[in-house]
Image (cartoon, rainbow, N blue to C red; front, side):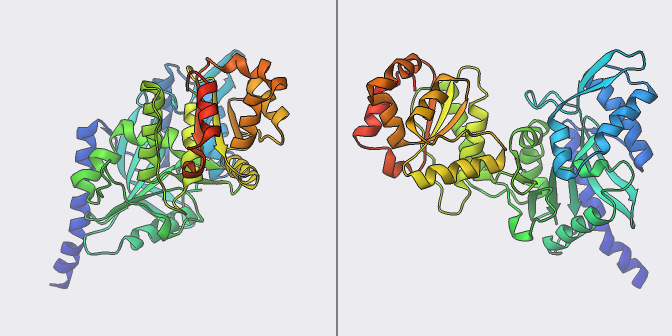
Length: 397
C-alpha cells in the first residue's frame, strides 16, 4: 500500500508536465527528445545550421562551441545577442548568429523534457524551451499543493550543481519558470535572485495569469512572446553583471510608449509608484525607441541637477556607455548636433539650449526632426512656460 501511494503522489507532476508539453506543441514548439548533453549538442548543430542556412563541419562546430564556452552567465548573455564569426576550414569568413534579436519570431522553437546533466550531482530537468537549439527557458514543475519556493530552490541547486557541466549550455538560460500548476512565476537567470524577486505575469488589465495551463502558457510562453521577452525585455545590468527581466506592468508601459511613437504624435503618460522600477522602465523604453529608424534622438528630461547625474548613472548601469550625460548647456548642444542617440539632461539646460542666441543655429537644425522626449517626474516638469517653449520649438515631437 505504501508503494502504491508513493506512485500516486508522483503522478500529478508527470501529468502536469505532459499536459504542458502538449500545449506548447499546439503553440508551435517542435517536440524533440534530448536525453543527455550529447543529444543536446547534436540538436544545437542542426538548429543553428537551419537558422543560419549554413552547414558546419565538425571542426567548424568545435569553434562555435569554443565561443559558447567562454565567460560567466552575464557574459554568455552578451554572446547570445552578438553577431558571430569564425574561419571556415578553407579559410573563408563565416558569419552567423545564435538568435535573431530584431525579428524575434524568426527563430527555431523546440521543447524537450527530462534532459539529464551530470555535474557535481546528476540532475534531470523538467521542461526546457530551446531557441535555435540553445536552452534559454527552464521550467521547473511541482505538484499542486507544494510551495513554489521548492521549485525555486530546486532551480538554484541546478545552477550550482550541473548548469556549468560539460559545454555549460544551460548557463545560457535567460528566464526561469516555476509552477505548481495553479501558481506560476518567472524570473531572470541571476544567481543573486531572491524568491521575493520572482514575478507573476498579468494581462493588460493587470489580471494575474497564475495557472500554467490556463492562461500563462498561451500568453507568456507563446513562441513570439517569450522570444520577444528574451530579445527585448531581458536587461543586462552592467553595474552588477546580472540579468534582469521586466515585470508585466513595465513591459506593457514600454509597449504602449513604443506604440505611441510608431503610430501617433500624441503624448503618453506612464504612472509608476515609488520603488516600482521607473528608471528601468524608462531605460528600456529609451533604448528601444532610439533604435527606430524614424527617430533622430531620444531625450530623457529631468528637472534637477542631482537627478540628472543620478539618472545618467542609473541608465549607464543598465548598459555601460549608453548615456553621455551633459555637464553644461554647450555639451548638451553638441550632443544634439552629433550622432548621440540618447541624451539625459535637465529641463533647465534644455530650455537654455533653445532660448540663447549662441545655440540657436545648431538647435534649429533639429526642429523638424523626429525627437522623442521622455519627461521624468512629469507632474513637476510637464506644465508651465518652459515645457510649452520646448513643445513649440520642436515641431515633430
